[in-house]
Image 1: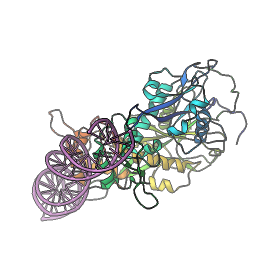
Image 2 (image 1 turned 120 degrees about the horizontal axis):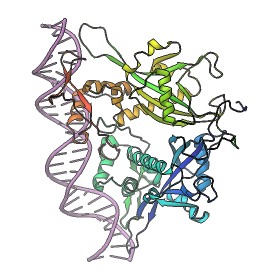
Image 3 (image 1 turned 90 degrees about the vertical axis):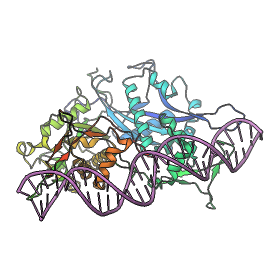
Image 4 (image 1 turned 180 degrees about the vertical axis):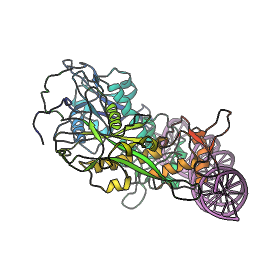
Length: 258
Length: 258
DNA sequence: CTAATAGTGTCTGTAAGACAGTATTAT
DNA sequence: ATAATACTGTCTTACAGACACTATTAG
């Protein structure tokens, strides 16, 4: 490894930015047990008013990657720094951006990641941090803000990425408990992709009984091999399911799954 | 923009590497007009024997991006330098990699792109360049080689990316003439994704008559509004089609397209 | 009882997949 | 005629989408 000064101009750093998404529940006041509303949120941080660039602006959390770590490690480090979350969170790389002028500090590309964090992992966020500095925003609200740098574009890219992965992969499980009801799965998908709308009985039948989707999800069973249920969303208990280990392939040229 | 020396250690450069894919045709010797065999090829360059790192190894083409260009511009510049191709080629970013030790020259991440180039654009490749330095390899052959750096992994990633996009988007058009026959479309898909196998009459019918795929491809029409045909693949003329402007959305949770 | 969600059943039209058979062209 | 590809038709089963209906629970 060379430690000499580089012969050519080199980048002034390689920051990693993360769009941290979560789904928050909001129970409706009611005398009856009913399904909570859910909303897609993104975590933003407010830049210090003494920042060199974009002081006081809301921005995606991020930080410089180092020579002795991979980019993914830098992203996990950053996630922990901002949210204190150090668990089974999936972080995926979305893209790397650079154009002259995107950062007034110089030649500063940025590697964009997204993290899908379960709501319960963020419980102490509000307690730990000053809401003036770190906050969850409903996604539509975040899109309205004028964010630092090109973070409006990055946030849009991250959202498009999560939406498309939500439909094409089993990404929904990142927002769900291990064992979930069909209704909860449906609700997560719809929270992330509002255009997704189906008759729930049909949704359930297609998911469970069609040949091409066998092995996508399966019944959650207790020790005795009996199907487990929950009554967390309704008085009538509902059956629990888990994602199986099947990641389907998908195609526009035939029936979709193969 | 600061031109001062950076206060911290910074990357030693931000190279862009490109997996340049093409499909080459290989006519079978025959007395009759018949469909050519097609093969997926990738372009590799041989590193100079006086290179600091991996001398004499085959590698993905690449080069340093600069402060005054976007990463995509750097990728196009690199494509032109290696192949002299400066046309309507689609280049897509796949991922950015870094881990300590991936490049003996130092802190050297790499932004991986792929380019899908039509065979005809590469006609003068053989003429222009020394085949000892730049060559198209059949993809299976390239995967067998011990490439420079982590380029074996990068090539695998690029191939997986192209295969999945081939099934999920209209990427096939990058390898096809504007007007193509159903059989040619089928052949391109199958060349890139060998596991794709269908009865061609069914393939055609599903593509043309199912509701969810309306607007994916449409008949190529001449000035008089009559369907165009070609006899380039067979004595019997075949109808020509073009991709329409519809990019379908795709889902594992319902019938696939929406 | 009510309110809420869970779940079943049925019907119709469309799509998928298997496969047989016919059509068109240059040589 | 022959060899190749192009195209058409048919039949069966699977799936999608619409929608009406019943079931279960706490209060």
